[in-house]
Image (cartoon, rainbow, N blue to C red):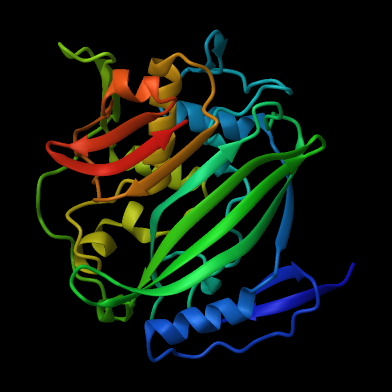
Length: 339
């Protein structure tokens, strides 16, 4: 097998194949940025291997306020033993980004599969996951992640500004074969001028106290309870640490308010996704999900109280799928369909 290094800005990505290294430059439009990204990564696959250790899984479960990883499996003191299946979505704390800090973007994100400047401001937009019902990832396995770019396309946001939509597919393999296909969509907007300037003091507002809340509530007239959530800055920081996510909007109050113009630290899209999958396996009671398709629609912040609930339990159950919403008041923040 021939290995080559593909240069991505100051970041080097190890790929197998015979690609010729390419040079990045400042793009003049979203169309040019998408074209360059496609040219750089087309038909290339990056491969990584990692031991799925129980300690990482234990820390995630505790961060999610779950003392039992699975019913009857208390992991308060001891990590789950070898052979324990990973709950749906929990693979997100493995195969986390690497690289040195100087190789990160101004906002703290890793630059793997990033479009060229100025379209470097990344947000998680949605995606799809599909699991093999007969082959689950388990603690103690040596798993392999294979990542490839599916597409990069120029788009326009609601305000008419340019952005780049990037779709990436990650396959997770174990000794039995393909266990999970994880497709992710990222949006890249132009970098803010303030990102290169001194950061102002945070906007003064309500002090957010903890701890985080994850609690079920029964609602009259609904088939299933809804789940009330509220994430503290501590909870968001712990999730960032577990996923090795340096994106400053999730933990740096000065950055998220003064540069990104958010009111507080932003709740991670992957955290909401895992919360939706946990709600489904706790409340749905119909076994493991085979597939989920989800879309992030509106941001949530540290200190926000919001709910996860089924959109229409009886109808969706009859169709073999469940629509689940994460919403704050009347605003849908993430929508998912589970089959």
